[in-house]
Length: 63
Figure (cartoon, rainbow, N blue to C red):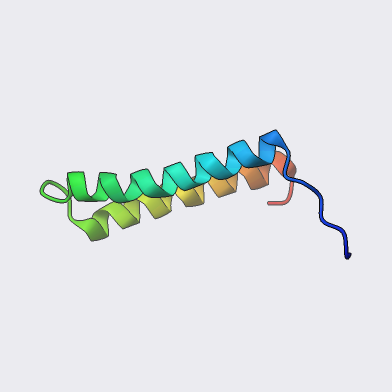
């Protein structure tokens, strides 16, 4: 385990997409704050994430 592999284009692109998603989340929270309470935004985001994880688990047959 002393050797490291270079990051390929797919991994680099996924990392950039993930960072952009995390960054845009903060912008969306600030933009929606006057209309929707931040705790409700967190609840909605967590619910959507749980649903997506559940769908991935069902697709893989591990549920």
